[in-house]
Length: 200
Ligand code: FES
Image 1 (tube, rainbow, N blue to C red):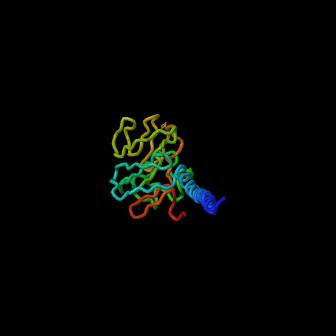
Image 2 (cartoon, rainbow, N blue to C red):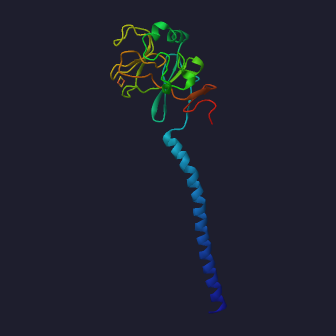
Image 3 (tube, rainbow, N blue to C red):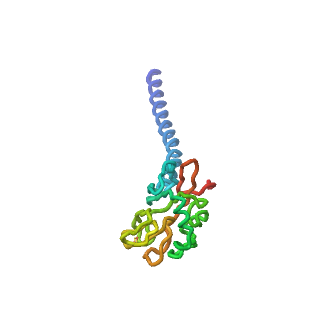
């Protein structure tokens, strides 16, 4: 082989070797990328926290969100409603007025309003604890077809379960427990649902 032929052969060999290193390099880069991408997708699938702007929520108007595929109800209640929620008249009609079934709410929501510091903002999972229908809000105190002495609350149209404006279940209906309060915290007019304040 001439010197020219040897040089051409070496250039072809070096070119092939560089391409091979390039391919290995690409795989080397791709693996850590997939590794860091996978947990985020997994977190999304199980449902990371969601943020909802509640700064403009109006009293008595239900704001809806979604967390882990479940409907979330956000409701601002009046001072009069908070008073009613603490009244013995209402509590005597409820199955679990003091929310003693602790799994239905975080510890911070075990109060008459079932909210952070007993505040006017209620955050609930909008899933009936009987068979999972969506209870409808009937906020006003007035006679309703399903209750002539209605004091305001949520009514499940599927089998007639009734809940008060803190999501506490009434006696004598099919639903066995209060509507769950998801972990959450509120900061600067934004509710973060799926995590309690102070959690990492
Ligand atoms: S699903 Fe709500 S009462 Fe049955």
